[in-house]
Image (cartoon, rainbow over all chains, first blue to last red; front, side, top):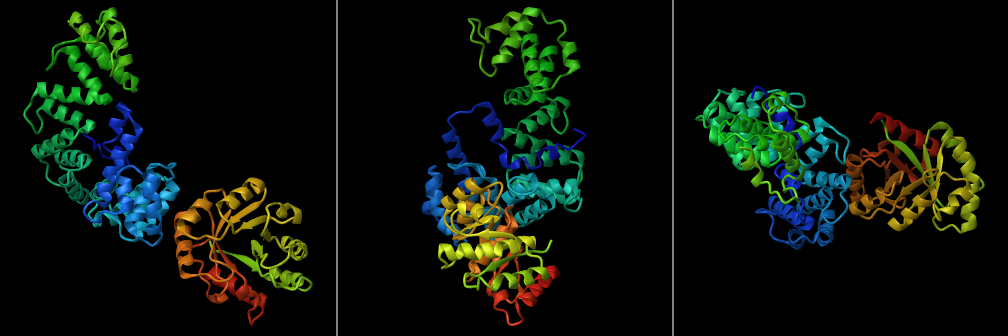
Length: 339
Length: 199
């Protein structure tokens, strides 16, 4: 908790919230694309644009039709149509993904005052995607979009104020922007704003409000916030100590694939803290954390005494996780024998 | 880096006297590229004009772009093809000529058209027309230069040489405003070059 989680999140924002779901279950691509498109279209066109044909086609997943309908409008400097085309090429909806083309349309839409396009173009400059990487330019675009009220831009701008290289270093400004983005319901901002409150970065420390913000992010499904909130519960920091609840949040984040949560949940299982002791279960989560590159000698020490058959079952289960091994023995039956 | 000059040779020059005039002009001012307009010339007239001009230009370090069939480039010993047709024509030229020779895409009708052709591994995208450039062409060219990697050529055949504005494009194409200039083509071209240096 000493360090900010922020900088890991820089630039990852555009994908926030979809990453985990995609990693876990890659179901019908089209459905996913349609849902993503719908959420984009609501963001872009929601209250501001009357329903039009291009938007309607986009919403229904007829991306090529949407593109055909939007192009003539885009050529005539219709910012919403330009952004729509930018989204289609940036995300490869019905066409090959084409960041260079997307950046061109975003640039036009941004010039014509579309703040979502400004933000997306900022991300592209930040990552060097479709345009040459240019963090300074990215910062200017985030600033412009944030000034226009774009929530994710405020969040990214806050991170830049913490980094203090491409905009003036200012934790106070960062905290203000982070609060605005958190109040608008952005999970990443709630998490980072909570962490700032806990540390007193950019303002007076407020552990209670900090814990509350992190809980809000955890409830939105942000795995790193779930881990953080579990840790606060475990320590009784900013919130009443509650081992059972801490275990629940670790388990939830572990199940979502977070390696740190898998490791900590395994430790609690290995010593029976806040949860009944269960070495096989602990070994399974250890195996899953290891698979992601997280090894922990402290956890290994707790598991030295695990019987070899339990260990073998645990590793077998990890291999098929989140499914179960296709043998006669079910995953549910196994831990009961071990305890 | 200042924009460079892309010189356009009109189709109505005198094949007998023009090569000497060209040599004089290119001796004074560096031009990396020269476009030989096909215009209304017959195939034979165009070929003989090209054969007279190409060695002079290449001697001065200027790459010569011709118009027509892709096969014409190697036949004439030119350096590349200037394609004003659709994306299919550009694609064909790229297949036949790249990577040894230059291919440029012209006849840009819209931003979408520019992007479609620009993605075909061309060496430049040419905005506007030797016959005249519209405000919308300039707008698209400026946008292209700002956001895309493929070099842009902005065609300004009507501008005063000492006032040309490439709008961020890597090349500016000049033609009638050089050859028909009252001060003479050599003076006009060096005035344009000084202007570009000053920007």
